[in-house]
Image 1 (tube, rainbow, N blue to C red):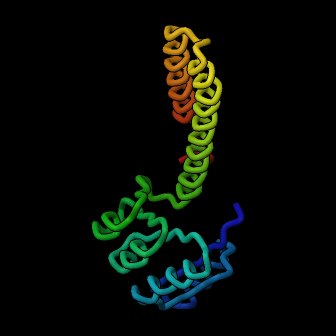
Image 2 (spheres, rainbow, N blue to C red):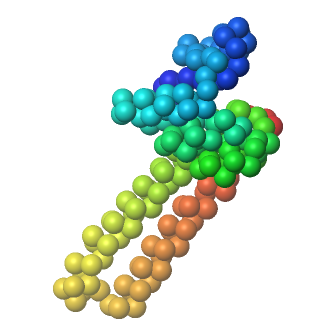
Length: 165
């Protein structure tokens, strides 16, 4: 997905390196205190990167708050959950990928809806302004526009997870 992954953990270096190695994470920072996590997030943001932080504990709250997108795991502490922008209901980190994919699908859907609403208005308003469009037809076209936008948005209900949970 072309995402740089960093592991910032309060755990010792041996544990952190073993987990990072197993997951294929190159950027590892171990024995990190909560304020250092938050400063690392700020450092990445200062490099014009969009930063998402995933955490579950009270020690992650400052970094969750300073990230562009804070993601908490529902089994985590109340402080982490209150601080985060997104809460994963299940304790499976693969749901982070699902959240990213669903957000991309949602943004694509919003752009499609804006495009078609703009097309309706670009064609309909001048025709109506010059008096060539019956008000009943204009009202029907506007209703159809709304129905098509809602129908397109409802396609997201069929979105499926990429992982079996």
